[in-house]
Image (tube, rainbow, N blue to C red; front, side):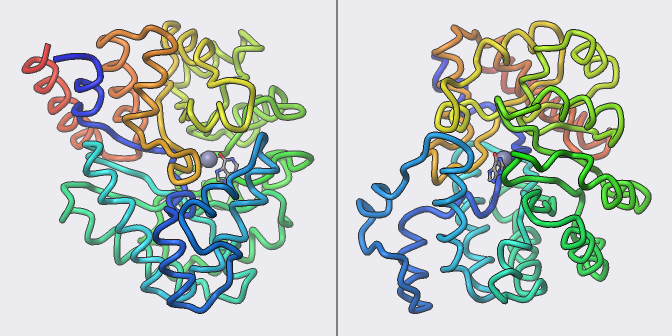
Length: 336
Ligand code: HPA
Ligand code: ZN
């Protein structure tokens, strides 16, 4: 089997996927019509033309206003279902989905509308041959008080949320701003992860604080860790996962950070490949893996390592991990 088909067909886990970032232009236009919301664009070409970004801040400036089209429970449900369909096409078997409640409550959409819509889709994921879980993210450019308020709002839905994350604009919004709410989340048995976006001001300090102080289980992006060998060793020893997103990186920074991903992979760090915001970067997980493979001359062995890392750092039981890893081995055996 050629490398491209191998990449597209191998069973995968996706661990860095923002549901709001999977809002494709056609659904955006459909919902803007349905909900009578003027987004300033009426054709797919116009929507795509509006995708003008070259860093995290300019990306987020396009990303948040588009969410206006999400109004009722069915909109959130349909958004997540559309992603699950794409995930199935990409042979994703397990997915952890980020969602940003504050991006919706700040526009007067009730928390329960968001979680009920998303969770309904999650509970139907098996129709697509997928198991899915939700990770609730706080927007780091909002206050620590707001994060805590939303943490409390989520309490009645504890069994529907697997983990807590942190995203949005990292500039001047360090991990320690959210130390308290993440300590609470840990105490309450949530899994925890934080974005450390690429080439941010103080990236390496943020990574250090995530690892040593907040004690996250994973870092989303986080390849700037290569700047400090001691931290790399710590991450390897403590089995910290890195959810890298090469195509996303190439949109918001100067390149896909392939060298860093390959270096970490070869050293034994648990790096993985994911799509981040596939509708905006026009790349789902298989394409992310394929673009990285082309750029870095990866072979099948590298791909298998990346895919296995994803199942290994997924927040699932050991038994489930073994089961998925066996599926990967079977695929490799049959498609050498
Ligand atoms: N970084 C920060 N915020 C985000 C991202 C990301 O990769 N995607 C969606 N919101
Ligand atoms: Zn992200």
